[in-house]
Structure formats: C-alpha cells, structure tokens
Amino acid sequence: MKTQVVIIGGGPSGLLLGQLLHTRGIKTVVLERKTKDYVLGRIRAGVLEQGLVRLMEQAGCAERLHAEGFPHDGTLISYGDEMFRVDFTEHVGTPVMVYGQTEVTRDLYAAREAADAPIVYNVDDVVIHDADGDAPFVTYAVDGVPARIECAFIAGCDGFHGVSRKTIPESVRQEYEKVYPFGWLGVLSETPPVNHELIYANSPRGFALCSMRNAQLSRYYIQCSLDDHVDNWSDDAFWEELKRRIPADQADALVTGPCIEKSIAPLRSFVTEPMRWGRLFLCGDAAHIVPPTGAKGLNTAASDVHYLFEGLSEFYAKGSSDGIDTYSEKALARVWKAERFSWWFTSMMHRFPDQTPFDLKMQVADLEFLRDSVSAQKAMAENYVGLPY
Ligand SMILES: Cc1cc2nc3c(=O)[nH]c(=O)nc-3n(C[C@H](O)[C@H](O)[C@H](O)COP(=O)(O)OP(=O)(O)OC[C@H]3O[C@@H](n4cnc5c(N)ncnc54)[C@H](O)[C@@H]3O)c2cc1C
Image 1 (cartoon, rainbow, N blue to C red):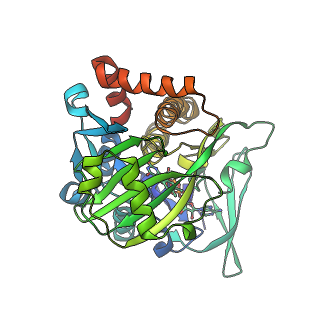
Image 2: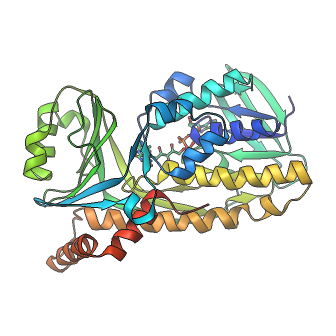
Image 3: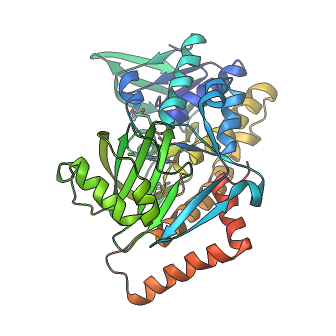
C-alpha cells in the first residue's frame, strides 16, 4: 500500500487530522489498534474550546455538534459553601461547548466512512521505519497477516501509550513530567446535571467536579487516592462523598441514580520535545498529557492538529516546508501554556498529602483573588475558552 500520510491512532486527533486533510485532497490511511466500538466506548473529555468547534466545522463535521451541544457562558467555582462564577462571555466574548469526546469521535468516524477513506482496525505490531529518511514506511499486522504502507509523512496520533513517541531516539527526546499524588474517580449517570454549568469544588475532603454531557446525562468526579479502586465505591458511597464536597444548596439539589460507568484516572502533566523527528509528527496525547482540571487534553490535541494540517496543506499546495518545519515550535508554544493553566487550576483546587497550613492559606488567597479580581477572572476565562491559534 502507498499513501501520502499514514496516521497512527484512530482517536480524536487522528480522525480530525484525517478529515481535514481529506478536504484538501490529501490521501491518508488511519491505523487503529482497537475496534471502532472500543474507541467509542471510552468516556473522556466533554468541554470543547471554540478552536476545536471551528476545526470540526472546517472538517464538515459540526452539524450534530451545533444541534446537540450546549454552549456554556461561564463556570462555577466553590470552596466550602462559598461559590462564585467566572463569566467567559462577559470577559472574553466566547463560550465553550459541552459535547462529549465520544460524540466528536462518532461524527468523525461517520465522515471518514462517508468519504470512503481507509481505516484499518485491530492493527498489531505497528513499527515506524526510516522516519528520519526520505522514504518512510510503516509495518503492522492484522490477525497475524503482515502489511506495509509507504508514505511521505507519518502522524503519530496514538496517545500516551502508543509507538510513535518511542520511535524518536532517546538522545533526541526530552521529556518533562509531573505526577500528581491523587487520581479522579469519575461516574457517568443518567440523571439531570445538578447545575446547568460546571462546578469545580475545592473542599477540605478533596476536589470534586460536577460536569455533564447533556440534560439527562451527568459526569461527576471526586479526587481519590492513587491506590483506591472502583470496587471500593458503591453508587451510594459516591453520591454521599460528592455531596460532602460541594456547597450545601447544590448537594440538596443533586439528583442521584445508578452510575452507568465508573473509573479512576491518575493525574499527570507530561510534555515531550520536539514533536517532530524527520517525517514523523506527534499530535495530541502522544506528545503531551495534562491533568483534566480545566479540560485542556482534547483541546490541546486539536491545536496540534491545526498546526500540522496547515503545515501539510502548505507543503502539498505550494511545495513549501515552512509550516512543517515550524510545527513542533508552534505546537509546543501553545502546549506549554495549556500545561501551565492545567497545573495552576489543579494546584488551586486539590488537597495534596503534604500540604501545610501555609499552603492551604495560599489556596484560599488564590481562590479569593480570582473571586474578587476582574483581571484574574479575565485571565482564567481567556485560558479556559482556549488561547488563540
Ligand atoms: C480516562 C480519561 C479521562 C479524560 N478526561 C478528560 C476530560 O474530562 N477533559 C479533557 O479535556 N481531556 C480528558 N482526557 C484527555 C483526552 O481524552 C485526550 O487528551 C484525548 O483523547 C487525546 O486524543 P488523542 O487522539 O491524541 O489520543 P487518544 O484519544 O488516546 O487516541 C489514541 C488512539 O491511538 C490508538 N493507538 C494506541 N497505540 C496504537 C498503536 N500502536 N497503533 C495504532 N493505534 C494505536 C488508541 O487505541 C487510540 O484510539 C481524558 C483522558 C483519559 C485517559
């Protein structure tokens, strides 16, 4: 097989890049390790920046997003029983869109299928060859049958555990990491959200987040220890703990019900540099991870896709390699700002095991500065709705 761009990974980064390139007539093959149903079963992000909404429009995949997504003009932040609001539209003139990553991925799969663009599922043993030369190729196997694709470029969109990042020699790769000493226990429940906007809660018992996917589907999280396990949490125990961490009036209004999904995710900040090695380009979680506080994971993947799409389009339309030569630099400049925001928001909202009384006072001062300062709210809003690209 031969194509222009091999995309490793059929998650949101790989599918969005493939669809955007398709609009410019650039041929791609997507290789995905799992089945489509497996990918669609993963419950992950739910808050989209306007940049990602625009990319979905550009890819011709935004019809359902606009019909079924919920624009949010602001968010609520609580500590103890105190709660205040940061109004995005008032401060920076832009809302965010609540629409699940699962739905984004579903729309992108539908578009790829409608375009009859190739996607190979259940691939094993993916190996990238000669990425630092002029004629790279990728080998893999499906059901034990080996295959090979020659290409001009490879987009490594295969997430944190994929092969792409590890293909870059250690002598070239510089990795930066911060692992947080807690995780998030998340549940999905077919109940109306407690509030029409998200609530980020700092409580003496730990962080909590009240989020949602739609008017009848809520997503709630509580900070938990890293050695905790979902089996330790009955539905009732989860709801009781959540109620203790949010303001009393919100706890009273909370509608509980059976949890249809329950999982624990560790929190990590991670960046690898550079995001390009020869003809291999890393995109999304393959290159960086943020703790989910602030909803930047999927959105930062989208800004990478934008820069890579622009670079590859310029290469094929004008023969210029300027865009791909500056891809890593441009993507990383924005990635680090999203890392900073996610780290700041995580640090302000969670209980850390080694926190001193001084550290706790600093958290409250940070929260009250945000509550009282228009400039601080504006800075938060600017980051939350997404820095420009
Ligand atoms: C549990 C969890 C909860 C999250 N919650 C949030 C949230 O609330 N808000 C937020 O903004 N972000 C959240 N994120 C982050 C967000 O989901 C990711 O940033 C986003 O999925 C990145 O998309 P991606 O396409 O780069 O990577 P992925 O979604 O990881 O997709 C990579 C794809 O590559 C495939 N793959 C892996 N290895 C190979 C291989 N060798 N060959 C072929 N295919 C391969 C995988 O199967 C996968 O389909 C969460 C992440 C996790 C894990």
